[in-house]
Length: 383
Ligand SMILES: Cc1ncc(COP(=O)(O)O)c(C=O)c1O
Image (tube, rainbow, N blue to C red):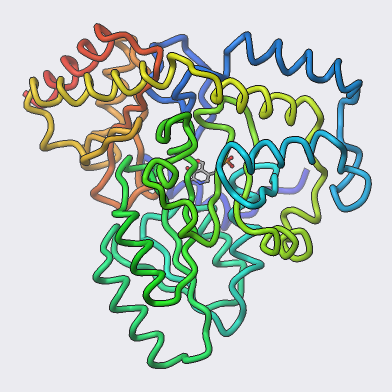
């Protein structure tokens, strides 16, 4: 075998020297404070059985889609699923992508055009930034959740580029912070400035909304946005994503989104599982209330242990405690893990240097005593 390129070796060495080398962890059977399975649906047997029965009923005894959806990979379950998603999330149309990553790179590489401008929150997920990077529009970041900064930048762009379409993208729950922009004010701002608003709801689906339709729905703002990205690999416990918007947006993406066109469609069991998870959320269930109770209890405990000041304010399932420096945050996470709790350190460069953190993901199935115990361990670390 030829020698591994020296330049790449040097990059790995630099990562190791910065205490930031990524490795694939194996499950250790710890108490889950780190997965995105907020409602415990990934292991929900009723959903598994419902999906299997649906496949039997449809006679969909295939292991794979056999091709791109534009060639041989489209089939009835896709139409059924997209119809069900439009109805569940309250949108004119839904287009399923193989993942949230694919949805974001597909959208942002295809929709904003060369003469257009994209404004994105500086903490936007990598998939949004990668998509923008693959596209041809000019792009500028705005300060995290700061609408005055965004407004100023839009005005400046409008002065110089009268004919440009302007796109604004944010997340309704930030994946590495758990916080939320003022979505109402943002929708109004975009409307008043004629900008197209795109909201990634990956971490809000299943958590917010009456049945888990997301935060825009909970706030009644779903019709004020140009597009929503919803993902199924987090609270819905399965895999895949959809872009919600108008029929014409769907048609545009089918024609121009390369991550949709040039890839094999999803296998029938993936679609059946999303359908079953969607049905599960539509019926009155206990998981969402349990999650909400746990979020409330976690916040009460933060106050009781005087830990609030170390945490980024959040009403979502993601709660982050700032612990500066890769070495320190890794050491703290290891200590907490040794006590039996799976809390992950988030290192730079995933987050900006100096803002390394412990990320606590809360779930419907976490017990109150687990929350109490893990925060007690954290509190001792601060002493
Ligand atoms: C905000 C956000 N958008 C998109 C994605 C990508 O979703 P998926 O895991 O389905 O590729 C993630 C995943 O971490 C995310 O946090």
